[in-house]
Length: 260
Length: 65
Image (cartoon, rainbow over all chains, first blue to last red; front, side, top):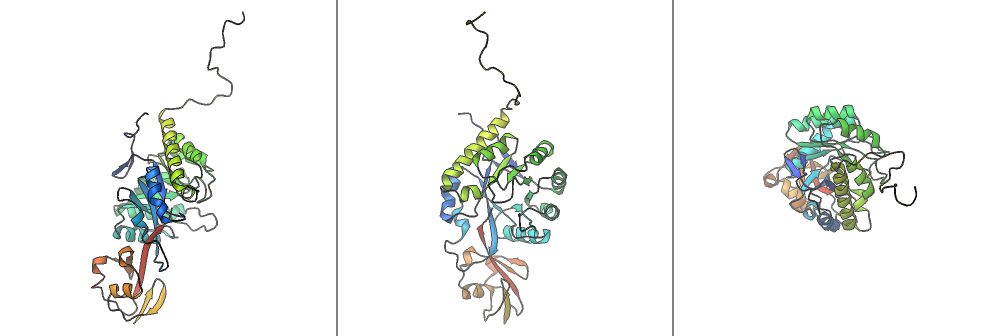
């Protein structure tokens, strides 16, 4: 089969051969994370920071993530740029590396990101040397502003977090892909491998999938399915698929020998 | 002395940050500590003395997307 390993995704100073980012949330058991990473080949995974829970039974989540996988701490729980900045600094001090997914949410009903606070946090953290991946409401103006603020990519949402509804924001994401100089990682709402493939066919540089994998009946199988879909979608994009037509175009010659 | 630990006011006799972590029964290996909004590296926990009124956050990495 055709090798696409030289088609790497570059984020900051790091390259990835896998274009599937995964997350550690919502797994029935943390023990499912290691085999899922192996089955999916995902090279980057999100983690969150919380006040310590004395009743947590399975220990440190970082123990379930192989060292070869890049950690992407998120700033979930932050409602302002300052809170996001504080979480990012803590994560870096804790040895999580310099990647940070900025997630600033003030809308508790739909969990949609606050682009203004996200932009402010991006500006501060990029200056501090973080590789900043902001989770954002799809908007081409904000995409440009995030670029100017030093973001390493943009992460527009497909649909609200955890909904599995796929690319409800498709037209907006398409505009971002067309106009953005930054890598575009579609994050949130991708519930099926077919939706991930669709994002990649459209020209997204990567997708981040957490809920759909973690809450499936078999996270390793789902992780592998998403990896294959992402790869298929990426290859279709690289192959430059022909446009759709409104009328039929014969694939076989219609002129023949059966009649005059 | 009175300390604010993860948002709750508590009474503690621990002299150093590490003593407090152990007093509360936490496994230091999986924790991140912030004292008065400053991250304290684990190497310094044994020597960081606590003061009355300190605000301490003990955090850990958890699952998240």
